[in-house]
Length: 223
Image (cartoon, rainbow, N blue to C red; front, side, top):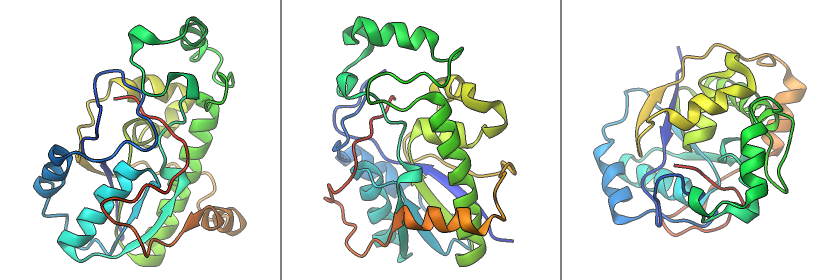
């Protein structure tokens, strides 16, 4: 039976606790070492899918070079939680007061957005769609490895908890380049062909993924 494996990207430039990474943060030498140390991959993996953010694309590109596995696609479904622009490249001590207020309300009001950021409800919906996309990809290609980010991975693996899974994800010690098997069976639309076609439309081939690719959308990361 085809499996889905999940991996967090390697360490990136500027990382520190509570840091909202800018979208273009790149892998460090330590991050590349972590990717090397993550080998060998589980037997049977047929290809790699990645988030479009540079630190994930670079991780996936390095894995492809080291293993010979194909890069199947990049999808924004695997991008990190979209932090508001006003907090990117900041740590908690420097968060704006209005953002601190939103943080205190976000678990009880998961539909609430702050500026151009992603609400917890939106993140959970995207994670649910991502679960269906990954299951469909595994049925199509065989076992796959998905390279992504701490918060979206934390929500993806706790879908039954609903939007509040975000709170658990923030405290989950999912280390750089750590790999876990995706065991969550929850996929409300796994057999919905039209929905899967939408996911395909949000994905793209990766003929040019390399260690220095910076083509991406604006998403941020904590941790």
